[in-house]
Image (tube, rainbow, N blue to C red; front, side, top):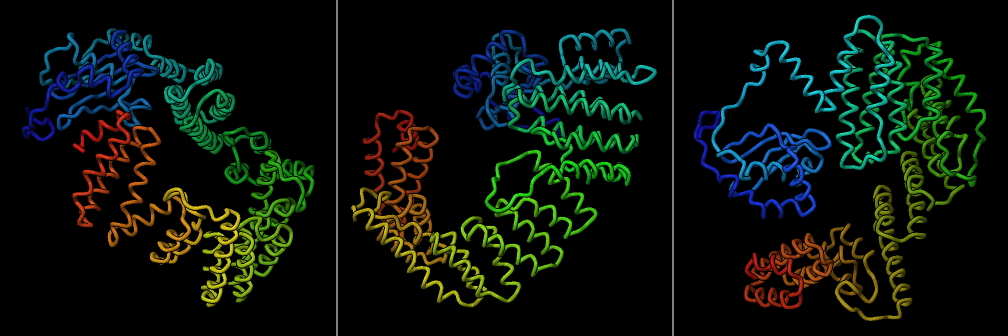
Length: 589
């Protein structure tokens, strides 16, 4: 057989029937997908089947037409499909349907086939026959029907028939109930046909109607979002396309700027989860011009005046309208008044620590460093040093910039003393290193961590360990700190003395396995048991892979004879777990 792209001979591959037996397909897809795929095959949803010696492809009609291909590679079954499951790499129901049709008794003998030049065939058909074929396609394919109807509407002479387009938009966005995740892609694909038609309408020079139609479509998108599992963001992507079209249409049509400003303001103020036209003042600045921006500002200022000022300690519950109006005013201030105007806007809500950070960042960007530091100090006075780590970071940066590194270290010590943990230890280390005083502060910080550990030990009543993962006390903080400092020996000593979390034991094992394989082996053995107890096939697979790694470490430790008894022990303890035993059998353990 020849490779049609190069003319070179390709090696023969196994026939589809030998690779895609019913049992193999069932194991690849699972019972539910197999049964649904069998229904598709029986219902005649597999069309345009093309076979090769080692592959087959077709169109399978599900919620939408999907392109499916199955083939064998190195004797192994492979599949691809344009549906969401297929894109994720799963052997989906559409692949099942194709496999059953391509390998069933009705399948043609597998032969090499020359590709059909469909374009040449269609160009050679009489006009009437071509029209008949297109209409037949429209009758059986909703996407094709919608595209053809919109093409006809767009091509009609005279003014753009807005009603026909709005009906098509409403039909495309209609959910008919809840649209689950697996159907969301096909649902969005239908909407995409309408969006493409609007894009073509704009290309034809109908900018003004496109403004109206995109606004209608965005309203429909906001309504539909509540009835669609849009986990993959299909509707969000469609909304972005519509907003882009709307901006282009406004740029081309130049609508009345005051009226446009009013509509944009209402969109932004009352926007839903899609945040349609969020930040419209900046995005549409050129279209709105001075007159439109003035109208927009007036509307925003009226809404802004209605908002009460909030001080530290006031209720900071999320208020969507307040957030949007604040963002409007911030954008307008940024465009016209600079840093002082922005600070005036931000200072209207000081009910949360990060507000002081935002003000400080804006002042620092303008070079007003002393004023910026004063704001974060006000934030620290209002909320304390443990309220928000970003407040401490901003103050530390301000102190270091002002040549007051000692103040930065003292501030971070207050945080560490109140909350002695590895994260605050690292922050203290960074500031004290900059100040050149880390060794002194390091001794003090380690003493604080050991005192915390002693308190924990007394509270635990000196209870003894029950396993590697269940230590007398938990010295995880000290272990993590010494790992941060790359002191592996001290981290190992702390873990053995006081114990630590399973994640840290595993990290220690991985770091010590090359030089000290006998130290790592028992840690990995305990992890194998933990994985097996999870009783999941993926955990069994991970456990078996880790057992293989243990075998390598035993050989590195000159103990190759220890592995077989170990593996036999695992098998004996877990002989009732059939899926695990199968994996052990495959390894001949």
